[in-house]
Length: 338
Image (cartoon, rainbow, N blue to C red):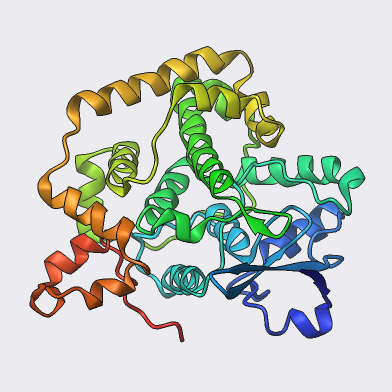
């Protein structure tokens, strides 16, 4: 079932971004800057998906963005590192967690082409402005840190794709694959074609970097290892993603990733080789411990992750260190839905 929520009735109750001096709405900002229909002319569509007799409402704007997609976009362009210690960053990541546990979903990667069936003819020009803005604003390190944050969750719970009002599991796997392939491709361009990456972006960012500092613990972690190495480790620890070079090649041919295709251009062979090197290295050096196998088994087999960890017979005897391990160091793990 699909219906349109009017701004008068729906927007007041929807957990959308607020426009204020401390938290400007990036979608409204893009609207006023580019004079294109973003938020001010936006009619949000709500698609209700029934899964296991439970209705899950998800709103989509004309770019295919859910409210979670909007929050992720805002955090990315505002360059808010989850390891920074300030109230604004804490509040936004806390809100993101609350959206996840209330069944809001990620529907697309940042640069994915997903035209609305209603306004398809106008989508291409809007999409070009939309992606150009993000490309000029985002920071690669923040992109990787945001990915590390997402990898703390069970991915099948927080990603969605709906076709004919039915959730397609295989399509969800493709969404997840595409999401992280895009991130790795951007890192590849940033490191292996740095001059191209820099020259393809505007020198002036509209949103400055926050002035708040990292905690000493996280600062030490970043000194010890690169953020990309941490990202690869989190990707492996998550255990839900299995990359295949053939799938990646097919994905790069997809119209959904046309923006990424244009950026890679004649660099695709180098990117595939880069990806293949990562996969080979992980196969040769990675060997799961019994502890990590048990963690992965628990995560993939309990009905609700992480809440059902509380129902395990060993839960009363678990210490904080073990609980942190089982929840992938997610400090929001057992927060309530309120």
